[in-house]
Length: 122
Image (tube, rainbow, N blue to C red; front, side):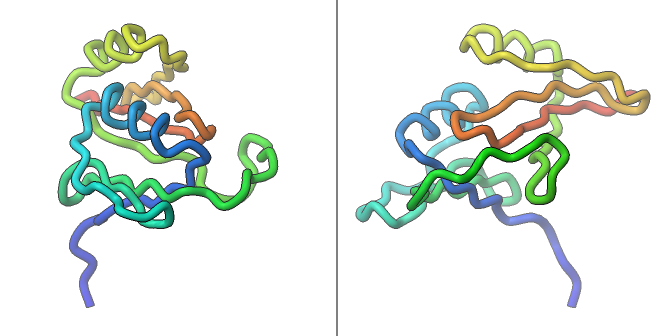
């Protein structure tokens, strides 16, 4: 068996409409399906870069930073300055970090999932 690529990341969200707006408008991901039932996921993105947003049945307990579980989802962007400008234009607060070999910004979605937009420096 050889893994080929990441297909999608599934996230449980408390307000699917609000989350769709964040992933569609802020990240520019295309909505790929129209769920017909409340328990069906909505998928946004494209092959190899998809998010599946599932309706959470209950709210998760608060998680301490660096605790076990999903830490963040990182997406490579071609222009980090443009990405920062887009986040600002949507009123999204973010944190910038210089990792030496990469530059990144981190921000949360409406349910607190951490997303990273990164670009590598040569």
